[in-house]
Image 1 (cartoon, rainbow, N blue to C red):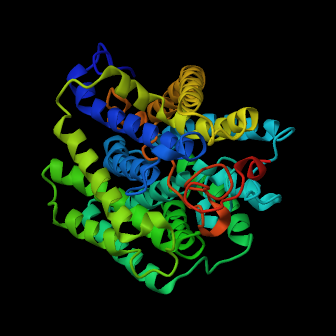
Image 2: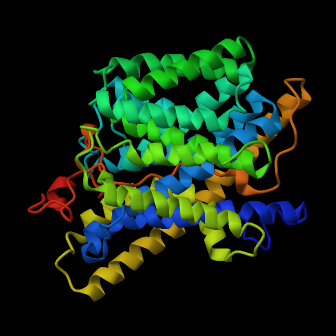
Length: 453
């Protein structure tokens, strides 16, 4: 896994080049999310408000995830291998960040949105934080909830033989998003018990998916649980349905590319996603007003389309490399931003040269640390996961087609969070990602130094 010129060197370079554009898109998404979280606190005058920079990155990543993840499962034809790959892809650096935040809590308090009880432990163990209305130790962890829901739903569809109907499923989720926006104003399944119940169910179901016993039943139970949590226990039900609609739209685009479907469902889904927040009472934030919301959607769609159009071209090495480390960038930059802000203080009133210099130092620090965690945590764990998956296949756990020699499947897909839930239920901070209100968007906003403790 490297740049376009060397990625997959020695093994099907043409295939690797065709998938390098996915890494390039992840690189763009990583930059967008990091800037969305950085700018309000270090260079507020540069933050755009005619579209949401973070949500733009999020939508690009969810399109990428939808495009590649179902095909990865289908290509393997092996649920066990798929989930081993996902576990070893997502959890190692995630757990490292969890541990780091808890250690840092000795001198810097954990975000106030994180419950101090076992429901938080359960929610972090499953990554289902947002859909069981629990705050994450790092604000950007909220997007992992929808990534996990997508995996569970896709697995249930695959086991049931309904995974090819991606376009129809995207339209269904788009319709559900509109309806949910009209009738739901928050989680109907309130309190900590969705986190308590979903934790054991998730772990038992995952053991069945990997171990093989009751695999079909486990897939159905987990898929159904994921949908119930998404619609009735999530912080913002309509947004959860929108995200699933976007991801399945990415899958439908892949079907169209392979000649197995049309683009009409994608167009219908785009319209439904565009109107979902218009009449929703739970949509009072600036980034879901018609102007910024539609522009953000259009830019994300255009970026993904542009990536597809350039998929046979040689892409900038740095952009592709940035996509390879994007999961580390995604998980690391929020805790590092809180630490950095605690050290340097409030620089919003400083001169442009100071703001630019500090911003550059922060970005370089994030990229440097991300390179280290990618090389010494992510890659070794991915390789271990692949070895375990191959060992299971060799032992008769089920045949699977070989994986593509590229990071297209190795990447985490969406797994880059951003956006702005500054006023969103549950206290998620999609604007600043620092655990408080966005002073750049709210006149007289709270002092970020005080918010950060």
